Structure formats: structure tokens, C-alpha cells
Amino acid sequence: MDDLFPETRERLSLSSGAVLLGGFAQAEAQALLHAVELITQQAPFRHYRVVGGGRMAAAMTACGEYGWVSDEQGYRYVRTDPLTGRPWPALPSLFLALAGRAAQAAGYAGFVPQCGLINRYAPGAGMGPHQDRDEHTMEAPVVSVSLGLSALFQWGGARRQDACRKVPLHHGDVVVWGGPSRSHFHGVLPVRSAQSGTGLGCRYNLTFRVVD
Ligand code: SIN
Ligand code: FE2
Image (cartoon, rainbow, N blue to C red; front, side):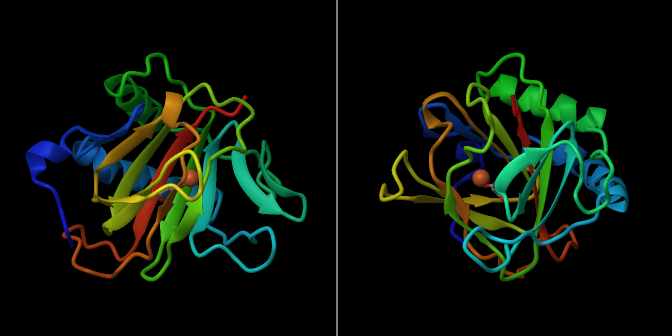
């Protein structure tokens, strides 16, 4: 996989307000995965429907005050997990602390997420270019943590037709996008089952969001 030198990956500006913090979550990656495991015992991974038909390739769940869902009413945030009928599991303090530190490092002080969306990509699964715009406020950034298998992140512009840059994301990498980049298009190319060094057969992505 094409890659950049480690020293340039440590802090790589993607566009104004968007930055890759290479390896930012590396030290706590195992603890994050353990927390994901506990969350999924309460709120199992599921494949939502795509508006317009079909199912999402990535399996999803969530924690926090809100979770993101997709159903016949469309894409939205809800306080109750439709699969279990219970509130989403709480955001672990480990998630809150990491998200706050990463946002701060990217220039966004005082970030307190209301949702931790958890995606699981099996080999072959990806996510087409889209904007994150189901949140009721766009003031706060999105903080995204990659774990497990590597993937190529597509980072585009404000318009769908803008050129996409392909950025490799590895275990422990964090991307933060906010401000002028908050509604930029982005996606994930289908994950390949290469050696990850982590022993994990999937890619996990945690995105932290303020919803309202
Ligand atoms: C997302 O766009 O919500 C997920 C991004 C990722 O999996 O890296
Ligand atoms: Fe997204």
C-alpha cells in the first residue's frame, strides 16, 4: 500500500480544518478495542439499509446519548437503539478523553461528543463518498479513529465532483475534520485483507460527533 513517511504522517493537513494525526491513538488502541467489545455486547453490530435500497457494507453500532440509524424514515440520530429498544451504551470515558485530546490537537478546544458511531469493515467492505450532515449542528468537528486493518480514506472537497485524495489510514490513526472542512465529501475504499500486524481481520472506525 502506498504510504507516506512516518514523520509526515504524524500531522498531515488534508485541507483547511482537516488533519490526519498519524498514530495518535496507537498507545490506547487495545483498550479502545476492548471497549468496543463491551459496547457490542449491549448494542450488537448490524447492517442498516441504504436509502434507495440495499444494505450498507459496513456493520454499525453506536454509544452515547445518540446513535445514528438508517430505516424507512431515512438517516437520523435517535436516543434508543431500535435493535434492542434500550438507550445506547454510555460513551466510555476513554472515548471521551481521546476524542477531546485529538480535537484539541487539531485546533478544536472543548470537544464533548454526544455520539460514538462504530463501524466494522470486513474485507471487501467500504463506504462510498458522502457528507456527514445528519447532525443538527455542524459547529463541532468529527473525530475519526481507525483500528485494525488499514484502509484507503478518500478525502474530497465541498462538492461531490471535487477531486479525492487517497490517504492510507492505519491502526491507531486519527483524522479530525471541522470548520471549513466539516461538510467535505469522504469515503473508504473497500478494505483488503492484508497483514495488519494487529491480528485483526477487520477494520474498525470510531467517529465522535456532536449532534445537537
Ligand atoms: C464515516 O465516514 O463515517 C466513516 C469513515 C471511516 O470509516 O474512516
Ligand atoms: Fe462519514
